[in-house]
Length: 317
Image 1 (tube, rainbow, N blue to C red):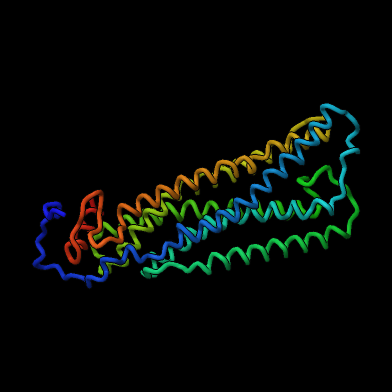
Image 2 (cartoon, rainbow, N blue to C red):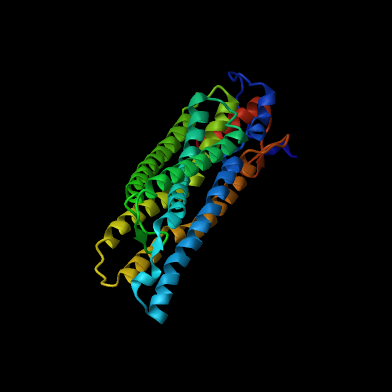
């Protein structure tokens, strides 16, 4: 490869790092890209079941009322048979918020601890396991409470005296955690960018971690913003729906259920996630090459101290 692609530098006062550090980027444990993908896939699979159940449970009742008439009492079900699905839906929706928060937390640990090796894959598996235990525990507790009462519900998505406080608590939790995630993600991106521009980075590993964290958070910001807005809209629209005046109880509840935006969110969020993941891989491929002659923006850069200095120059433009 021609050497005229290199940027000549005055290296008189430059203290070169260990040349083995030139492979630092290739050795980065890509927890956020690959292990988090397991979390997202797990959540999206459950949310897809949520979406199908929501559409069927509400749409089926509405179709029966439109085409076959009948009295509302024909469609009343026992609450204890519907509650497990209701609770699991709530838990899954909450878990998606915690997953995005975990992405931010993992990057924050790497940035502020100045440790170049992110969390291991076992963390993702452990996180999934803990969430499953949480779902089972909450569902079991709610069922044991619900069995003490005898009342009926219209369908599986209807709130009951037992589930309503839980619904409100989880909604407040999602709003709080998503707001914290959004604000913190923006602040962390700004921090990484300013830290790189200060030119006081002594470790190439840490320099890579800062740049990689900035790229990851910038990539996930559209998902975080989109998810947070959906949660805001869902809770706000739910409050509006409670004020709807429709005499037919079955029709009112079915329309409210079909207006639930979360199932439609599950159809668009995976597409957005796949797009972001592709962009992140593309940027990593261009900026964090494993080759002996790494490329930045299509140009081959030299190894060792020149490579290190070139990175600092490129990243401060």
